Length: 311
Image (cartoon, rainbow, N blue to C red; front, side, top):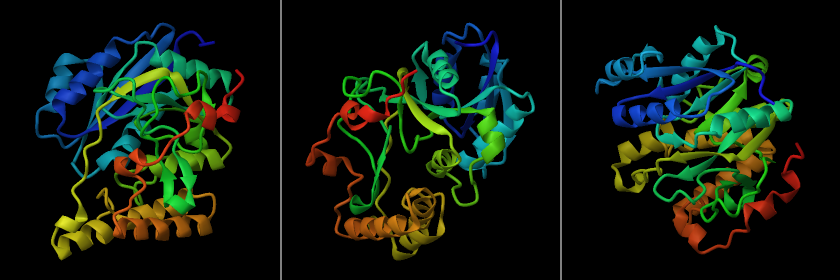
């Protein structure tokens, strides 16, 4: 049950993706928001493509916060959340700007959160070019495979029909109660300037908040781009990517932090990190689609059969 005019603040950090940002906001403007008081905050982190000007013209009700270009995803989102907290909403939806939404997604997420006390709710992420394929939901920890195992063969027909509990929610679209933020704080932008969600939801779980995926809340995402291999760069650039630049997707230092902060134990995290490095050295990365193609996946409705919530 959704209380009358329940307040929800939507926060997204953007940078030089004007067309994607507009597409996202247009989709958001068409959702069913009956019974909700929805406000939208865009943190424009130094865009030079006219994002702020176009958003002001097309969506005058959207609040825009200007960044300097050095906030990145984590502190950009944190900045928007701090602004949203001044209005004391019940929930904050943290999201990326490269996605479009089923019209009922937000009401479904809120109903799930309201029916399950102390819960943080993630949407069912799907690929917008293959809208039946599941994307980045419900990773599971497997130290022997080198850390968090993602799924590549799951579809809308292989997930549970009802919300189910997980160990980590990828941060593309996450509904967080303000009570959880006040209790546990914001994302850690010092360790994770560009991947703060990797550490945040496991931290909430350790504090006693349930992490739920709502399969009825469908959100369609842009496929990830494949990062450039560090092997193809100069030694100096490779060293920077792997050990210096925490913002780089290939950063081993950032991965070490994430394993230490999110593994079931420090020992498990350290073991998984060493195994990941060895596998990556021998070009046998279990996070790659190529690995998945050679290995079966059980349907998530079976994998999480005992994690489906009753409400």
